[in-house]
Length: 400
Ligand code: PLP
Image 1: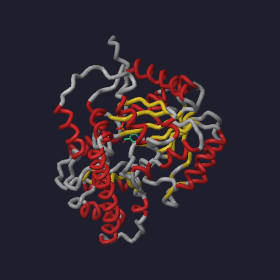
Image 2 (image 1 turned 90 degrees about the vertical axis):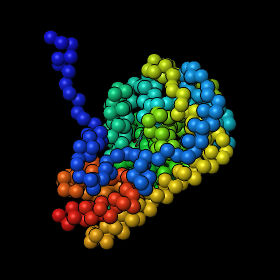
Image 3 (image 1 turned 45 degrees about the horizontal axis):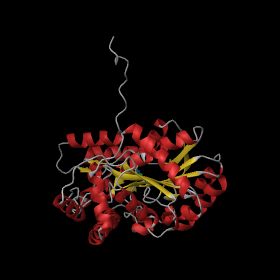
Image 4 (image 1 turned 60 degrees about the horizontal axis):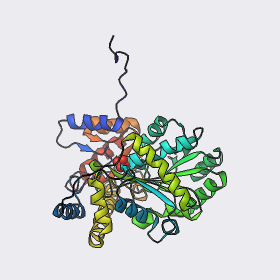
C-alpha cells in the first residue's frame, strides 16, 4: 500500500479552475474577467516604466545575491513603513512599527496569522461576508476558527454598516478582525470615512485585534486616500496589523513583494514583536528573496522613480474608472433597463455585478465571458476592444 493511497484530491482553486477553462475555450472573442489582475488597454499585463528604470539602475551595479536579513531588506522595510504610516508619523518616528518583508500580501497575512496563533491560540478570526477567498483558508490553516461579519448588502448595493457594527459588537475581546483597507475584494464597496470611524470605535471598545489587508493601495482614490483607514486605527492608539501587497500597485505579481507591519505601543514592544515575526519567517522559509524588494525599494526611495510610479499608478486607477463608466453607458446602450450606475460607485479592480450564478454560467457558456459564479467581474480586464462585446453579452443574459 503506497503512502499516498488515501490522499484525496483537493478541490480546485475556483479562480485557477476558471482560468484553465478560459484557456481551453477556442472562441476568439472570449474575455477573462475572472482574474484578479490589472491589464492595460491592449489586454496586456503592464511592465511599469518605473520598474524597468529601477531594474536598469540595479543592473548598472549588479550586486551579489547573498541572503537578506530574516526580516528583509532594510531600505525596503523602511519604505513600506513610510508608505503605509507616513515617514513623519509618530509611530514611525518613535520606532513603534515592526515590519518584515513578506512573500506578497498573502505572505504578510500568513506571518501575521502564525504570530497571532502563538500569541492568543484561542482567538477567533472574523472576515467580511464575502471576502477574498483565501482569507478563510489562510487563517483556518493557521489553526483559527474563522467566522464572518456582515458586510455586503445586495439589496442596497453597498455595505451593511449596521450589520457589520453589530457583528463586531458581538465579538469576544481578542477576536481578530480582518478588514480590507481599501478596494474591497470581491464587492468593490468600501466604507466611508465616517463609517470607518464607527468601526474603529467598536474595535477599540470591544478590544478586538484589527488586521488590515492592503492589497490595492493606490487603486481606489489615491495612495494617501487609500491609506486613510490604516491611519485611523493608528490614531486611535490601537495595536494594528497591516499586510501590504505590491503585486497590483507595481504590477509585480510574480516577484512576491509584500510586507507585514505591526504597530506596537512602544519601541521596546516593537523590537520584541519583530523578534517573534523573525522566528515565523526563519522557520518557514528562512529569509525573503532579493529582486522584487530591491526594485520596489529603488522606486520608492528615488524621487524621480517614485514620481513616475505615482503617475503610472494613477494611470491604472483612471483607466479602471473609465472602464466602469463605459460599462454603465455600454449596458444602457445595449438595452439594459435596470439602473447599473452602482458600478461607478464601486472602487478598485472588481465589480460585484449582482448577476446570479446561473447568469454568470450563461455568460461563460453562451458568450465566453468568464467571471466568478459569485458575480464578481474584474473591471481592470476590460478594454476598449472587449467592452462592447461584454456589454452586449451581459445585456443578453439580463434579458433572460
Ligand atoms: N488580499 C487581497 C484582498 C487580495 O485581493 C489579494 C490578491 O488578489 C491578496 C491579498 C494577495 O496578494 P499577493 O498576490 O500580493 O499575495
